[in-house]
Structure formats: C-alpha cells, structure tokens
Amino acid sequence: MQRLVLLGDALELRQGPLREALAVARPLFAALGAALGPDGELVLVPGNHDHALVAPWLERRRRDGAPPPLGLAEQATWAVDDAASALAEAARPARLTLAYPGVWLRDDVYATHGHYLDRHITVPTIERLSAGAMGRIVGPLPDGAVVPDDYEAALAPIYAWSYTLAQHAREEATGTYGLSLRAWRTISGNGHRPLRRRTLAALFPLSVMAVNRAGLGPVRADISGAELGRAGVRAMGEAVDRLRVPAQHVLFGHTHRAGPRPGDVPADWTSPGGIALHNSGCWVHEHQFLHGVEPYESPYWPGVALRVGDDGPPQRLHLLTAPVP
Image (cartoon, rainbow, N blue to C red; front, side):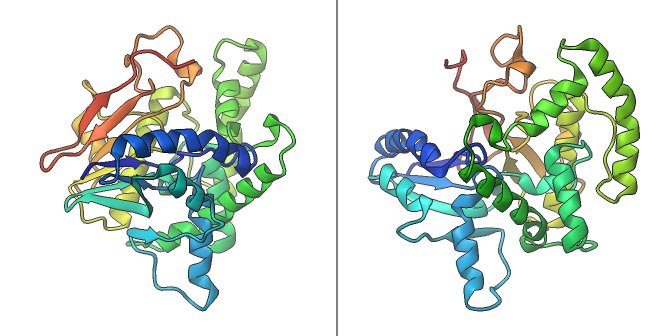
C-alpha cells in the first residue's frame, strides 16, 4: 500500500472563508487520490492553519462528558457536514485518514505538524506571544511530562478565534495569516524603510523585556533567520521530550525550515532525550527568504518531501526545481 502524509497546514483556514479553501483543495485532493488509487491512503495531519479540520471531532469527544486523554496518534472521524468529509469525497478512490496530533509511520518513526513547539520557541512570533497570553489564562504547562491536552488547552482557543475571524473576512488583509511574517519583515528590514527599521530595532529589546516581565515568554531579542531555524528545532526537541514520544525519529513541519541539511550539526537536530528530528520544509515560495538563491540553496526553498522506508532514517527528496507561478 502506498501512503502519502500531508503534514499539516494542507489548507489555509486562517486567511479566508472555508468555502474558498475547499474550492482550492478539492482539485489537489482529487489528483492525489487518483495517483494513489483504490489501494492507497492519504493521511492528513492537521496543523495550526487547518486545525479546524479536526476541531469538530475534538468537540464531539467532549460533548457527552469528560473525554479520555488525547493520545499521540488518534484517528479522527468526521460527520457528513464536516470539511473533512468533503476532502474524503474528493480523494476517492484513495482512502482519507484524519490523524491527530500525529501519526506513527513505523514503530520508531512519528510524524506531527509541530505546532506544539509554539509553547517553547524563544523567537517572539505572533504564535508564540499568543500562546504565552493564553497560557496566562489557562495556566502554564505542568512541570516534567505533559500530554497533548496540555498543549491543546492553550493553542486550540487561538486557532478557533483565527478560524472564526477568517470566516467573516471581507478582504484578504482581514485574515490572521502572515502577521508574524509581516512583523518579522518590518523589524529585520528586508531592505525597506531603513530609518523606520532602525528605530523599531532599537526599541525591540525593550519590548522583549516587557513581554518576559508580563509572563508571555521566555523569548529572546534575536530574530535573525538563523535563529528562527535554531529556535524552532530546540523547541520541537523540548516538546517531543516533554510528550515522552517513544520514537527514534520525529518528523515535523511548521517552521518551514527543512533539515537536517548538509552542513547542519547533527546534535542540533537531536532532542535532549536523543530523538532525531527531521523537518519536511516549506511548500510556500517565501520570497523574503529566497531572493537571488538557487533551488534548494536555502533551507526554505519549497518542494522538499521526506520518504520513510521499511528501515533506516527518513530520506529527503527534492521535488521542485523552480517555483510554480
């Protein structure tokens, strides 16, 4: 059986109405389903941008009383009017599986989108600050070992708010997608408005101090491109260790930074508990990271996939030699 895993954020549900996202997604799911065939399986692991795909199932679990603890790899079900039902119909003849918060690909290989790392990352992204603010309301993570429900308590309300806002969006700018990117671009510069950038950069460390004093951190003032990548891997390592994931390899996305790549330090891509981390990279052409670079020269070049065989570590595949218009 062939199995293709879409590792989260397969649909953009924070930018506009669900109907628009489904209209874009149906042809893709139809093409994937036709390629996989009746013996194939398409696994969808929702992330932060498409958390609404699994939210109805999570709500139904709570409807009749306290649900059992959310495991590391649950198989979600959907009702006929859920968005996942429309995707399952489009993907025929292949079978669609909705897995959350992750899926086991082998006894020693676990895959998840990686959005839980937003509770640990030290770069002050909008997602990190939102998680910190919600953590002040619902309480901090327990010390030591945690379970997925501990992360969901702070993150799911944020995703629900973003999704609801997008359903009432009247124009593209109304959605919450890209807020972190626009803020990072403004402060880091990217060649625009140097005076404004210098002013904001001078004030930024003071803002970070205020954020930490308010209990929304801890975060750091380093927002360089290199630190974005390093901090994401560190945070993911902390998350998988705190979750006690019994795997040798963990695959994730979320930060858009593919790795490990040639030249990366292997220890940087290993959790403190010894789990090897692998990031499948980005499928969006983010020009602010890619200006003037050759294909795959940047870890943010889109079109990287990971192949998991019967044994051995996951292998990186380069599928896109040029950006698709």
